[in-house]
Length: 244
Image 1 (spheres, rainbow, N blue to C red):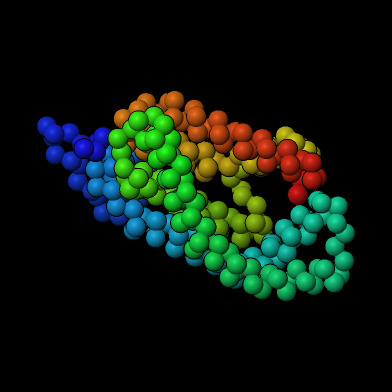
Image 2 (image 1 turned 135 degrees about the horizontal axis):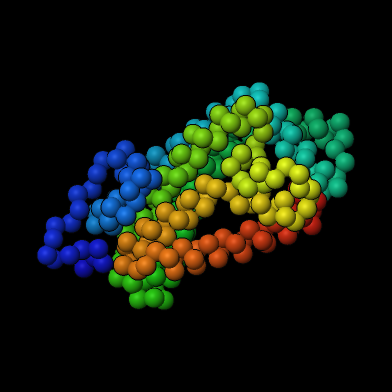
């Protein structure tokens, strides 16, 4: 029997897809309870993939987006200590013409792969190591629905990036500390901490808590600890490479 099921009460009715997207963001516990009872994930994952691919593809199909891509590539290479020659710059400009296809392809493949992998890891931890009673399909449905944050993120970030003519996220903590050395460790660390990712981790913790009938606090603490380790490692590498 599902861990969210109760023989004395009917399972919560699964809302429509738009209602689930709004529900995950506004009333996550009730929505995740319905998702756990009726674990449908295809529509949610497909919607997330389409929105991410469309927003990134639309941005990179513009001259502003392609120039932002060029600027990012040049900045990354110079951060590695590589002098960008005129010939190399021309090559980057040619590559920018195909960046839209690369980004769309990456979203179409990367989002599902990451979702399936994350669900597999979490299922292995909670069901395999901790003895939880949920199925992989239920875990996958929870992970897929937490992707509602990615939809909001893309709709928020894409127009801002167009106005800023930049590919860097305007929602990371480094934007609040412009006085820091861009290539330093602290600036790199703050740049790695993205507010939408923090929101996603919190929603994922709530969903897993509902599904496996565990307290949200310890789950969130463990997930944020993993996030912190990854952020510190990435920041250390970026600082060592001069902020690239």
